[in-house]
Length: 315
Image (cartoon, rainbow, N blue to C red; front, side, top):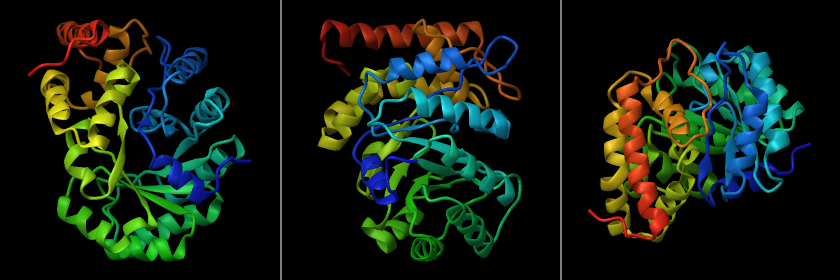
Protein backbone atom coordinates (compact mmCIF):
# COMPACT_ATOMS: atom_id res chain seq x y z
CA UNK A 1 0.00 0.00 0.00
CA UNK A 2 1.19 3.49 -0.81
CA UNK A 3 1.97 5.84 2.03
CA UNK A 4 0.70 8.90 0.15
CA UNK A 5 -2.73 9.79 -1.09
CA UNK A 6 -2.69 11.64 -4.44
CA UNK A 7 -3.30 14.94 -2.64
CA UNK A 8 -0.49 14.29 -0.16
CA UNK A 9 1.85 13.26 -2.95
CA UNK A 10 1.15 16.44 -4.92
CA UNK A 11 1.98 18.59 -1.91
CA UNK A 12 5.11 16.60 -1.16
CA UNK A 13 6.46 16.86 -4.70
CA UNK A 14 5.94 20.62 -4.71
CA UNK A 15 7.98 21.05 -1.55
CA UNK A 16 11.50 20.33 -2.76
CA UNK A 17 13.95 19.15 -5.39
CA UNK A 18 13.20 15.92 -7.28
CA UNK A 19 15.68 13.09 -7.78
CA UNK A 20 15.82 11.17 -11.05
CA UNK A 21 18.50 8.53 -10.45
CA UNK A 22 20.27 6.69 -13.24
CA UNK A 23 19.67 2.98 -13.67
CA UNK A 24 22.81 0.95 -13.06
CA UNK A 25 23.94 -1.55 -15.68
CA UNK A 26 26.68 -4.15 -15.64
CA UNK A 27 29.21 -4.46 -18.46
CA UNK A 28 26.86 -6.85 -20.28
CA UNK A 29 24.07 -4.23 -19.98
CA UNK A 30 22.03 -6.26 -17.49
CA UNK A 31 20.50 -4.42 -14.54
CA UNK A 32 22.97 -4.07 -11.67
CA UNK A 33 20.50 -4.22 -8.81
CA UNK A 34 23.10 -4.22 -6.04
CA UNK A 35 24.77 -1.12 -7.46
CA UNK A 36 21.41 0.58 -7.91
CA UNK A 37 20.30 -0.13 -4.36
CA UNK A 38 23.62 1.08 -2.98
CA UNK A 39 23.29 4.31 -4.94
CA UNK A 40 19.74 4.94 -3.72
CA UNK A 41 21.11 4.51 -0.21
CA UNK A 42 23.88 7.02 -0.89
CA UNK A 43 21.48 9.58 -2.35
CA UNK A 44 19.17 9.11 0.63
CA UNK A 45 21.43 11.18 2.86
CA UNK A 46 20.23 14.23 0.92
CA UNK A 47 16.78 15.71 1.35
CA UNK A 48 14.57 15.54 -1.75
CA UNK A 49 10.81 15.67 -2.25
CA UNK A 50 10.54 12.63 -4.48
CA UNK A 51 12.48 9.93 -6.28
CA UNK A 52 11.50 8.98 -9.83
CA UNK A 53 12.72 5.46 -10.55
CA UNK A 54 13.50 4.43 -14.14
CA UNK A 55 12.55 7.85 -15.49
CA UNK A 56 14.11 9.48 -18.52
CA UNK A 57 17.49 9.81 -16.81
CA UNK A 58 16.99 6.23 -15.66
CA UNK A 59 16.70 5.06 -19.29
CA UNK A 60 13.03 4.09 -19.13
CA UNK A 61 13.01 3.79 -22.91
CA UNK A 62 15.60 0.99 -22.83
CA UNK A 63 13.98 -1.13 -20.11
CA UNK A 64 11.49 -3.93 -20.59
CA UNK A 65 8.27 -3.92 -18.51
CA UNK A 66 9.69 -6.75 -16.37
CA UNK A 67 12.91 -4.81 -15.78
CA UNK A 68 10.96 -1.67 -14.87
CA UNK A 69 9.11 -3.64 -12.21
CA UNK A 70 12.40 -4.86 -10.73
CA UNK A 71 13.91 -1.35 -10.75
CA UNK A 72 10.84 0.22 -9.15
CA UNK A 73 10.67 -2.46 -6.47
CA UNK A 74 14.36 -1.93 -5.67
CA UNK A 75 13.83 1.83 -5.40
CA UNK A 76 10.73 1.47 -3.21
CA UNK A 77 12.57 -0.86 -0.87
CA UNK A 78 15.75 1.23 -0.73
CA UNK A 79 14.43 4.79 -0.48
CA UNK A 80 13.77 6.43 2.91
CA UNK A 81 10.24 6.19 4.25
CA UNK A 82 9.75 9.95 3.87
CA UNK A 83 10.74 9.97 0.19
CA UNK A 84 7.94 8.96 -2.19
CA UNK A 85 8.94 6.81 -5.15
CA UNK A 86 7.31 7.38 -8.52
CA UNK A 87 7.41 4.83 -11.32
CA UNK A 88 7.18 5.26 -15.08
CA UNK A 89 4.39 4.27 -17.42
CA UNK A 90 4.17 4.78 -21.14
CA UNK A 91 4.32 3.25 -24.64
CA UNK A 92 0.83 2.14 -25.76
CA UNK A 93 -2.21 2.47 -23.53
CA UNK A 94 -2.29 -1.25 -22.72
CA UNK A 95 1.37 -1.25 -21.67
CA UNK A 96 0.97 1.99 -19.74
CA UNK A 97 -1.93 0.52 -17.77
CA UNK A 98 0.09 -2.63 -17.09
CA UNK A 99 3.05 -0.59 -15.84
CA UNK A 100 0.84 1.57 -13.61
CA UNK A 101 -0.73 -1.49 -11.99
CA UNK A 102 2.67 -3.14 -11.59
CA UNK A 103 4.07 0.00 -9.95
CA UNK A 104 1.31 0.05 -7.37
CA UNK A 105 1.80 -3.66 -6.66
CA UNK A 106 5.52 -3.30 -5.93
CA UNK A 107 5.19 -0.30 -3.61
CA UNK A 108 5.47 2.86 -5.72
CA UNK A 109 3.74 6.01 -4.51
CA UNK A 110 2.94 7.60 -7.86
CA UNK A 111 3.18 7.38 -11.66
CA UNK A 112 5.03 9.50 -14.20
CA UNK A 113 3.16 9.00 -17.47
CA UNK A 114 5.41 9.34 -20.52
CA UNK A 115 4.10 10.16 -24.00
CA UNK A 116 2.74 7.26 -26.03
CA UNK A 117 5.30 5.54 -28.20
CA UNK A 118 6.02 6.79 -31.74
CA UNK A 119 2.61 8.04 -32.73
CA UNK A 120 0.93 11.39 -33.03
CA UNK A 121 -2.37 11.85 -31.25
CA UNK A 122 -5.28 14.26 -31.16
CA UNK A 123 -6.22 15.82 -27.83
CA UNK A 124 -9.14 13.40 -27.43
CA UNK A 125 -6.71 10.52 -27.87
CA UNK A 126 -4.43 11.91 -25.17
CA UNK A 127 -7.42 12.29 -22.87
CA UNK A 128 -8.30 8.62 -23.42
CA UNK A 129 -4.65 7.61 -22.85
CA UNK A 130 -4.27 9.50 -19.57
CA UNK A 131 -7.76 8.58 -18.40
CA UNK A 132 -7.11 4.86 -18.86
CA UNK A 133 -3.98 5.03 -16.73
CA UNK A 134 -5.63 7.14 -14.03
CA UNK A 135 -8.53 4.70 -13.79
CA UNK A 136 -6.13 1.74 -13.57
CA UNK A 137 -4.47 2.89 -10.34
CA UNK A 138 -5.23 4.67 -7.10
CA UNK A 139 -1.80 6.29 -7.21
CA UNK A 140 -1.24 9.93 -8.07
CA UNK A 141 -0.39 10.43 -11.75
CA UNK A 142 1.97 13.01 -13.26
CA UNK A 143 1.58 13.70 -16.97
CA UNK A 144 4.74 14.45 -18.96
CA UNK A 145 4.23 17.18 -21.54
CA UNK A 146 6.79 16.64 -24.30
CA UNK A 147 7.42 15.28 -27.79
CA UNK A 148 4.20 13.82 -29.19
CA UNK A 149 2.16 14.43 -26.03
CA UNK A 150 1.63 18.18 -25.90
CA UNK A 151 -1.42 18.82 -23.74
CA UNK A 152 -3.57 21.86 -24.50
CA UNK A 153 -4.76 23.84 -21.49
CA UNK A 154 -8.35 22.76 -22.09
CA UNK A 155 -7.23 19.13 -22.25
CA UNK A 156 -5.42 19.40 -18.93
CA UNK A 157 -8.47 21.10 -17.40
CA UNK A 158 -10.73 18.30 -18.60
CA UNK A 159 -8.36 15.61 -17.35
CA UNK A 160 -8.10 17.32 -13.98
CA UNK A 161 -11.90 17.36 -13.73
CA UNK A 162 -12.30 13.73 -14.78
CA UNK A 163 -9.29 12.22 -12.97
CA UNK A 164 -9.08 13.06 -9.25
CA UNK A 165 -5.72 11.27 -9.03
CA UNK A 166 -4.11 13.43 -11.72
CA UNK A 167 -1.79 15.49 -9.53
CA UNK A 168 0.93 17.12 -11.58
CA UNK A 169 2.04 18.48 -14.94
CA UNK A 170 5.68 17.95 -15.86
CA UNK A 171 6.86 20.15 -18.71
CA UNK A 172 9.53 18.98 -21.11
CA UNK A 173 8.51 21.15 -24.05
CA UNK A 174 9.63 24.61 -22.98
CA UNK A 175 6.74 26.48 -24.59
CA UNK A 176 6.21 29.45 -22.27
CA UNK A 177 2.90 30.38 -23.87
CA UNK A 178 1.58 26.86 -23.30
CA UNK A 179 2.81 26.86 -19.71
CA UNK A 180 1.14 30.22 -19.10
CA UNK A 181 -2.15 28.92 -20.48
CA UNK A 182 -2.01 25.70 -18.44
CA UNK A 183 -1.09 27.43 -15.19
CA UNK A 184 -3.68 30.17 -15.68
CA UNK A 185 -6.42 27.60 -16.29
CA UNK A 186 -5.45 25.13 -13.55
CA UNK A 187 -3.74 27.26 -10.87
CA UNK A 188 -3.29 25.25 -7.69
CA UNK A 189 -5.20 22.21 -8.91
CA UNK A 190 -1.88 20.68 -10.03
CA UNK A 191 1.74 20.65 -9.02
CA UNK A 192 4.01 21.89 -11.82
CA UNK A 193 7.37 20.24 -12.46
CA UNK A 194 10.18 21.44 -14.70
CA UNK A 195 11.30 18.59 -16.92
CA UNK A 196 13.47 20.05 -19.66
CA UNK A 197 16.97 18.59 -20.10
CA UNK A 198 19.22 20.16 -17.45
CA UNK A 199 16.21 21.74 -15.78
CA UNK A 200 18.42 24.13 -13.81
CA UNK A 201 18.72 26.21 -17.00
CA UNK A 202 15.01 27.08 -16.81
CA UNK A 203 14.35 26.99 -13.07
CA UNK A 204 14.35 30.72 -12.38
CA UNK A 205 11.98 31.88 -15.16
CA UNK A 206 9.75 28.84 -14.69
CA UNK A 207 9.26 29.71 -11.03
CA UNK A 208 7.15 32.66 -12.18
CA UNK A 209 4.82 30.22 -13.97
CA UNK A 210 4.04 28.18 -10.87
CA UNK A 211 6.78 25.59 -11.46
CA UNK A 212 7.95 25.14 -7.89
CA UNK A 213 10.20 22.16 -8.50
CA UNK A 214 12.06 20.30 -11.21
CA UNK A 215 13.83 17.08 -12.04
CA UNK A 216 17.55 17.45 -11.40
CA UNK A 217 19.81 15.06 -13.29
CA UNK A 218 22.80 16.90 -11.83
CA UNK A 219 21.69 15.71 -8.39
CA UNK A 220 22.96 12.24 -9.36
CA UNK A 221 26.61 13.24 -9.11
CA UNK A 222 26.64 16.69 -7.48
CA UNK A 223 23.85 16.53 -4.91
CA UNK A 224 25.17 19.36 -2.74
CA UNK A 225 25.45 21.67 -5.72
CA UNK A 226 21.98 20.70 -6.98
CA UNK A 227 20.40 21.42 -3.59
CA UNK A 228 22.26 24.71 -3.25
CA UNK A 229 21.06 25.74 -6.69
CA UNK A 230 17.47 24.80 -5.87
CA UNK A 231 17.59 26.76 -2.62
CA UNK A 232 18.85 29.83 -4.47
CA UNK A 233 16.01 29.53 -7.01
CA UNK A 234 13.32 29.19 -4.33
CA UNK A 235 14.69 32.11 -2.32
CA UNK A 236 14.89 34.31 -5.41
CA UNK A 237 18.66 34.78 -5.10
CA UNK A 238 19.23 35.68 -8.73
CA UNK A 239 22.88 36.56 -8.22
CA UNK A 240 23.63 33.12 -6.78
CA UNK A 241 21.67 31.37 -9.52
CA UNK A 242 23.46 33.28 -12.27
CA UNK A 243 26.83 32.58 -10.68
CA UNK A 244 26.16 28.85 -10.50
CA UNK A 245 24.86 28.85 -14.05
CA UNK A 246 28.07 30.52 -15.16
CA UNK A 247 30.39 28.37 -13.06
CA UNK A 248 28.92 24.99 -13.85
CA UNK A 249 25.55 24.62 -15.57
CA UNK A 250 26.36 26.49 -18.79
CA UNK A 251 29.67 24.71 -19.48
CA UNK A 252 28.02 21.43 -18.49
CA UNK A 253 25.28 21.95 -21.08
CA UNK A 254 27.91 22.77 -23.71
CA UNK A 255 29.37 19.31 -23.12
CA UNK A 256 25.88 17.79 -23.13
CA UNK A 257 25.15 19.34 -26.51
CA UNK A 258 28.12 17.64 -28.18
CA UNK A 259 26.19 14.42 -28.81
CA UNK A 260 22.63 13.27 -29.34
CA UNK A 261 21.25 11.55 -26.27
CA UNK A 262 23.99 13.04 -24.12
CA UNK A 263 21.41 14.44 -21.68
CA UNK A 264 21.43 10.92 -20.20
CA UNK A 265 24.97 9.86 -21.12
CA UNK A 266 26.56 12.86 -19.42
CA UNK A 267 24.87 11.97 -16.14
CA UNK A 268 26.42 8.50 -16.13
CA UNK A 269 29.72 10.14 -17.05
CA UNK A 270 29.32 12.40 -14.03
CA UNK A 271 28.80 9.34 -11.85
CA UNK A 272 32.01 7.89 -13.21
CA UNK A 273 33.84 11.17 -12.62
CA UNK A 274 33.01 11.20 -8.89
CA UNK A 275 34.02 7.56 -8.39
CA UNK A 276 30.51 6.13 -8.28
CA UNK A 277 30.22 4.47 -11.72
CA UNK A 278 26.79 3.26 -12.81
CA UNK A 279 27.93 1.32 -15.86
CA UNK A 280 27.37 2.16 -19.52
CA UNK A 281 24.28 3.54 -21.18
CA UNK A 282 22.27 1.12 -23.28
CA UNK A 283 22.12 1.46 -27.08
CA UNK A 284 21.04 3.41 -28.98
CA UNK A 285 22.66 5.86 -26.56
CA UNK A 286 26.44 6.12 -26.51
CA UNK A 287 28.77 7.07 -23.68
CA UNK A 288 30.90 10.21 -23.66
CA UNK A 289 34.34 9.70 -25.16
CA UNK A 290 37.49 9.92 -23.05
CA UNK A 291 38.15 13.57 -23.89
CA UNK A 292 34.60 14.59 -23.00
CA UNK A 293 34.75 12.62 -19.76
CA UNK A 294 38.04 14.30 -18.87
CA UNK A 295 36.57 17.75 -19.52
CA UNK A 296 33.53 16.95 -17.39
CA UNK A 297 35.74 15.64 -14.58
CA UNK A 298 37.77 18.86 -14.54
CA UNK A 299 34.58 20.92 -14.42
CA UNK A 300 33.11 18.87 -11.56
CA UNK A 301 36.35 18.94 -9.59
CA UNK A 302 36.67 22.70 -9.95
CA UNK A 303 33.23 23.43 -8.55
CA UNK A 304 33.39 20.70 -5.91
CA UNK A 305 36.71 22.03 -4.63
CA UNK A 306 35.22 25.49 -4.24
CA UNK A 307 32.27 24.18 -2.31
CA UNK A 308 34.47 21.98 -0.11
CA UNK A 309 36.81 24.85 0.81
CA UNK A 310 33.92 27.23 1.37
CA UNK A 311 34.92 29.57 -1.45
CA UNK A 312 32.20 31.69 -2.98
CA UNK A 313 31.41 30.65 -6.52
CA UNK A 314 32.51 33.68 -8.52
CA UNK A 315 31.63 34.81 -11.99
